Image 1 (cartoon, rainbow, N blue to C red):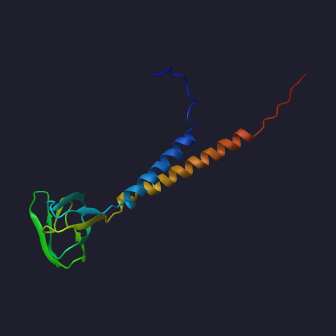
Image 2: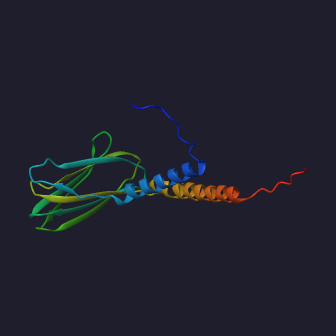
Image 3: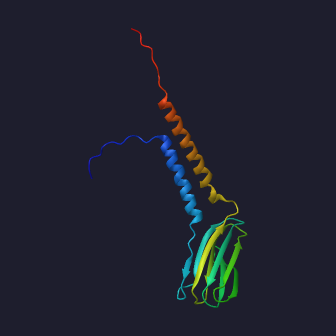
Length: 166
């Protein structure tokens, strides 16, 4: 690697702007980036889980390509079955399921399409919207950084006059 060299110090306003924009963009990806899962017929049942608080819900949307019996199972931390439901779906039919959690903990759900191709979309609906916290924090940091930048630019533009005595 080449010589070290020096770089000018980063202004605090730039740090606040960069941090605020990073939080806003990260929050946008966290909430808006939902990609459907293509579940092939030879795949094992789709399993996923999350740490949930009381009142949170799993929002599941499943579209099957052929007629099948869809089975959705909810398991708690000890792998005990809390609910198991089966639904008969026609070719191309969509099934939506919202499973609300009664007690905080880690929960796992399993979606079995019984050997049929399916498209699965999952989402978690939080009761206390804690995952939305990056947006106001990012907005505040961005606004403060822009305010600091404006103030520093105004201070740099102020011309100081001095009286020189001869």
